[in-house]
Length: 282
Length: 300
Image (cartoon, rainbow over all chains, first blue to last red; front, side, top):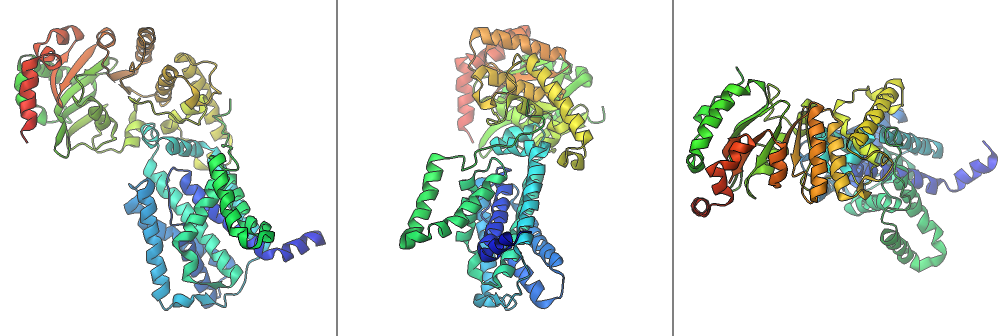
């Protein structure tokens, strides 16, 4: 590896970590949007992963790979628990149910002893590095591409455009909805664990509803036609505040303005591509 | 015969039963004897939406290889009956036997897997997909390449997808959309979208296809083309059950008709018989019948 690249990674380590983590969160949103559902539980699943990862690191001597696996698994189990009874919910109803999950968990974090209450958990050893985070993002992105370009991706696009027509051609909607919710929760949990270790400190407020909206805006800004869109959206929205630093106090204004302009003038997002598939490309 | 539902004979005869008494009785009897070869047999099927009775104890059989028409005035429950058969809404009671198998409790996608395809009154397109991909999506229920092969583009998936594409192109030609494979489905004209919906339905190689008002919004020329297309679909071995308001189209195309009114079956038989059936004429035109039914509707 050239020395200058190492220097860059080191200098912008925090930014690169957030880029990677937010990219994973954007993908976790994408996975749900890809089957035509809307979940606002991403921040809650992230929090579940973060607390699981932090507690495992603080109290056990597990290797980091296992800590990460556990941090993906626990939110996925939670998703299965709330997913099964809410499978019949679609659109805003699922969104509301998942917001509810987030609030319940936040109150648990604030009040439970093991999660450190409102103060959160600190002194988590940083066991991450830039390459690890970027590699995990790359793997998640590749996974989304592999699924998306196959007949499963075609089925997902069908259900995204018209659920009724998709069901009638034999697509098992509940199975896809549940699968997407599980994958989404696992990705968010992974991102949560990475961010907990990267920042060495977590508190309940990091996983509140606003954060779910931010994650949604990654996906909307980037475009949901392909998995690359949400990741690009996450990159832009993570880097933008840094790039707008010279604007000082007006930074937030411009940040918001750019989102509004993109949504108004690029309704399909920054990356309006859709995935090409074998059967679909004549 | 073991799966023959017993409630056929026990079905409570309501007012409309009396209305269609003369014609319905013999119709029912012939159904019972002929329905050995029935691909689809619906009996005692009911659906209520709150206080509204959408479908009330409907029974009829669709013979394999026929075009069966479902007609009746607006609000007769035709689309609800379609939704019950395809599984989009759950039935309150009754039986639906398809290919000798009771399917009334099966979810929508499982019924599709057994060979029931359908189109919609308001066309439902996968707007952003290409025309070819739309038809390929229609084949979903019968694709079986292992997950691993699908994800990593391995030989069995490739071969399956190639076969799907070839068949999809053939179907596009069959419905008259040859050369349009690469276009965006949502960009097709109305009549073309109707044809694409039919091709998408055929891609699953169904045994039965439900067509909800396939000729709606079409001019006489297009309607004639559609009738020709549907006859060729039947020649492919697909049994058709269709809801349609265009009576010329129905009478010309259908082998058998079932007439619904206010959620009940009031008549059935060959188009020539149904056309002259007093109960049917009353349902469509009769003032007395309308008044009587309205009076019943007001009573809870």
